[in-house]
Image (cartoon, rainbow, N blue to C red; front, side):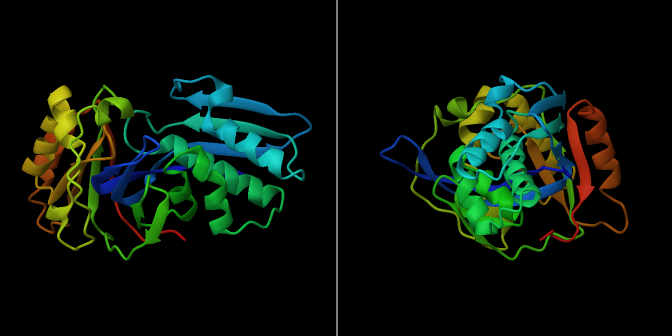
Length: 276
């Protein structure tokens, strides 16, 4: 079977507190972006094989979250046999888009179906939660309010149908360690509201001074007419949301912006219905 692990963006991200275990409790809204995705083909096979294509990943194959997911589930469910995996990486890493987490979640979905494990979405989410903070979200893959380390999820009503999204990633990444290095914890949470101006990403205050191009991209998106622009997660991708303009007044601004950042534009797409 072939699956298309998609990425996500964050509407706001507040770092609420540091936990005794060294992690941080967050509050954010995860939104799936189906238009930018990896490709994952999983086929039962007499022996295990893993083939990777596309963007080079900065880890050994055995450390890939897809492999970790397979080993974890195969050790727990004896009915899982060997598989041949073909994986094409299109979502850049170090981008704040959750690509690796999505890959792991979709691997779990594939194994559940191929070997008829009969696991519910809730059970699958519990299986992958230990692999990464964002993994559980991609099991549900609809807009969710997230708490804890990103693993406590509540689906929310969010109507973005017809909204245009432009995603731009500069030619540099941001490590999670770097993003947290200067974070100032205010203790303020994220209020789910229709007023997007309330959605603040706490990481921007740390990341923008270290990577000025990221802040510049956000400003350019707002100048081009975005009603909301933000860095996604801990960066480095920045996205802008644009309302439909029947007179096309923003088209020229967007065209100029896309030309300015031609090598960095990841996606220019329009939201449709959420997949269930």
